[in-house]
Image (cartoon, rainbow, N blue to C red; front, side, top):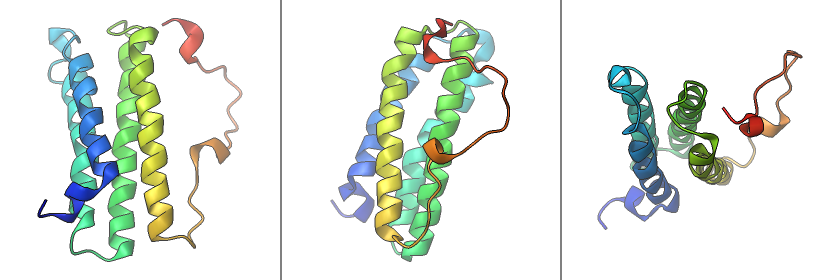
Length: 143
């Protein structure tokens, strides 16, 4: 392997994650071809591309920045999965494996960021607080 990113586990996981997301989005209706289908595919592709782009010939700070972009793209994929589930394009049981894989990939991206820049207080999603008291749908809502 000639390039640094090709040796990164997190990059390989991003590639592996893209396959089931593409397969899920193939079941979306034709009218979503240029909207949700395109959006989720661009976002899932962006994860691996940002990891690769940030890995070679960059400073740690620059690589951390690109890992942040990869993480944002991953969160975009998860948001698209929720939209697809709410619209009835996929079921919760179908979404669950992709959701769990996203959690694993997010943890790996965060771990790599922390390794490259251990003195930064990275905000983790589970420590964020929200003031909105409106009930949010959960994975168990069956939508």
